[in-house]
Image 1 (tube, rainbow, N blue to C red):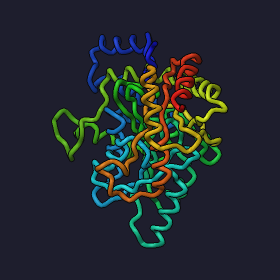
Image 2: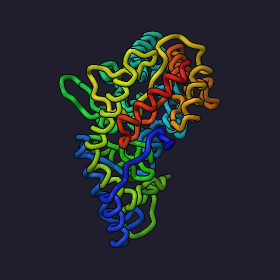
Image 3: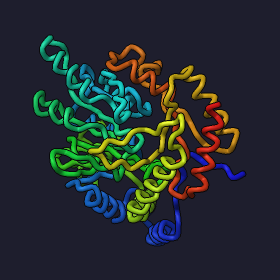
Image 4: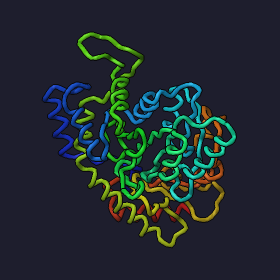
Length: 379
């Protein structure tokens, strides 16, 4: 029986044509006009003033921390339940971490709990975070109102990790805005399994022209303008190559189609798993998730990760590419000593949740097959 991967990219004639045209024009590295075209088109698509294309989502985060002059002695509040790159990027600049567990209403970091913790720290005279790094996991935005309140009351900047949430939107005030465009900087990933792909790559967006220029400067080895090789600080080789930008430009033109397909997949799972012991990751009424990865957990209490892991093993054996959700940061050796709030919620989701095949090419029959095998695996 055909193997159903977790999430595979959709590549077609438009991607092939634009990449071949870029090769014919002789621009394959970071030179050439198509990188700038991709940046401008992306910024317009998400509603941001500036966009800087870089080599990965992790590079986007790293550059964002550098652009805000964060470093040793600073504290960054970051999601505990996330892929480790979110934490690593803050650690690259020498910052310490405050890990924040998830809320059951979105599975994202609990922003109300974070607001309470920062308020407590302020009253107690304890160190406040120098930046907030909410991660919008699985294509669902984090609750923005408490984050906005923290920024307004305490002046703490926000770097949004929207690596998994391109195309998602959320209510900010009375406006529906693209996730990743509401903080001081927003970061996206174009890895092979993301909403759109450039093979590997990322993007930093911001409405602040000075921050955008700082990110761009650092991404090009901090080279000064002119024909000579003069550099005014330590920079990084983080710029996106033209071939990647060409692929991204073609993919971006199909983003609406991908979002529609992801919604169809999500609705098909809802139909197939209705009135079952499986519950899908929640979707808040103030958000329009991208449904990047459809994820689920058993409704009833179980024997924790051993039950979930057996389910994943059975699905994999049946040709279905399910996987456990991430192991939280507080269980990772580099961050085991970091302060943590919301540990119980983080551990519970980490031990019971799994992600299901979510490729935009999935048919209703594919989804029904996954659902049937999932229900068999719960026995």
